Length: 321
Image 1 (cartoon, rainbow, N blue to C red):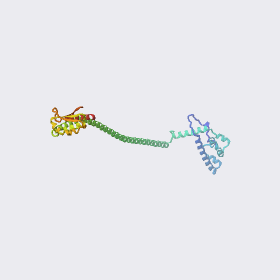
Image 2 (spheres, rainbow, N blue to C red):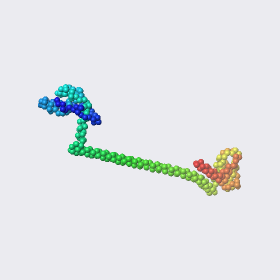
Image 3 (cartoon, rainbow, N blue to C red):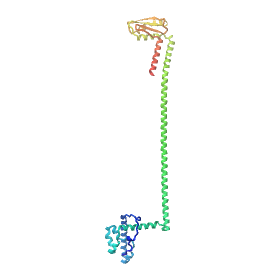
Image 4 (tube, rainbow, N blue to C red):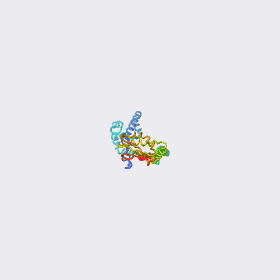
């Protein structure tokens, strides 16, 4: 087996900064796959070619014994395919560091071949087109993103405007409603206060008016209705109580009419043992009359009754305040 395809560590100049970390697991899997393909190819070639032709046809590639270092489990398969001597095998053994350095060298050369200034014009044009296409796609992605962001912002602004408008209308309606209710309540209080004031001022006026009306009516009708004095005397006698008797004083204008109704007045006395005398009092005016008892003198004249009525009306009006 030819040794020209071996790469020894003392042949390669390596720099400390020129290193590349390689995943040995993936590398070993790749080596195993390449080894299996190579063995399959050689097996097919051996059927039609001699041992010498097979040796000449052997292409430079990854040494099979290197796989034994990475995966010792594959020793049997490597020994079956190996045709070298033990001396050849010892020369083929490389440590892991040498393999890593060689692989690093190969990757570096590949990178320099594709990215150095010695790249062919066709490759440079193709690379430029790829870069331009990538830049175009990137620009398009950025433009699409900006457009999408713009649409999102506009949609958010529209939604915010609609929401704000609805909120503003609702707030305006609430403010107007509150203002109207406040105005109504204020007006209601003003009307109530005005009503109370009117009532307070009207009641005394009504009392005075009613009093004047009573006085006017009674005085006007007195000449036609003499029964008013009789009614006043009857009402007074029915309310008074005396053990001795009553002396009724009437005016000269009313004496004759009252004398005719003396028995009617006597029937109004609640005490049957009490006496009643009717006398003409020249000091009294028409419509005036008094009842004298042992307890005092009671004025039951028309004017007195009207004054008492007016007083009671005024008291009633005062109590309502």
